[in-house]
Amino acid sequence: MDFLKGFLTISVFWMGVVNAEEILDKSRDRLIPFEVSYPLDKVSCTPEIKCPVAFLSAGYGVSHTKYSFLVNQLIKLGYMVVPIGHELPSDPHISVKGNLFETRTENWVRGARTLDFLKNELQTRYQEYEFEALLLIGHSNGGDISSWLGNEAKPYVKSIITLDHRRVPLPRTKYIDVLSIRGSDFPADTGVLPSQKESIIFGSCIIKIPESRHNDMSDYGPNWLKDRIATLVTNYLSKRACKEE
Figure (cartoon, rainbow, N blue to C red):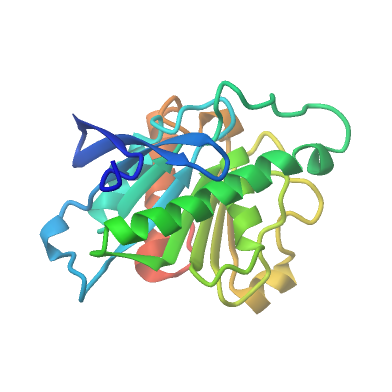
């Protein structure tokens, strides 16, 4: 049991090799569901030349397994991708009234703790992968969770990509690369997105997709939107450039 460290593993198949797992955070008595998708060129990942890692956080009410269009794109780029289930049946429902930044903070703090816990657990298990330079990617509330952790000044957070998150301000720092892909139907809260001046200072990239909907930025969305998001993510990660196409 010490060797297993609380892992339950089921092998399934996708574009690459995928493990669906659960791990127990004993400090919170919390069983966290997640998946691990390996890069297509897995054999090139070694303890000496580590492959990059992306933690993917879903939008509220969307399963962490419903972002295969992003997972498949990232594993082509050489990433290990870890989609994470943040919401458990025992958790309180996310608030929809009042000052949402205040009433949803508990959710974001809990999610950030989960990301931090998984980073520390998985890096000992996967020594061929670089957990000290994480990419955090999240849709909606998952983007809020990612931004929250980014604002905690963890040195291992190197890049953040959000898909239309709306509540938690993006980090303003030169030490974290930021891309935020925006939908067209809902605005972000004041102060969430950097100003034009801040984007220049910190190198943040904000790209709005015309005629796109917040709720469509998952596997449930139209193919044209999924393809556009995948292209923007690829261009940004490959060239570190803020480009529309």
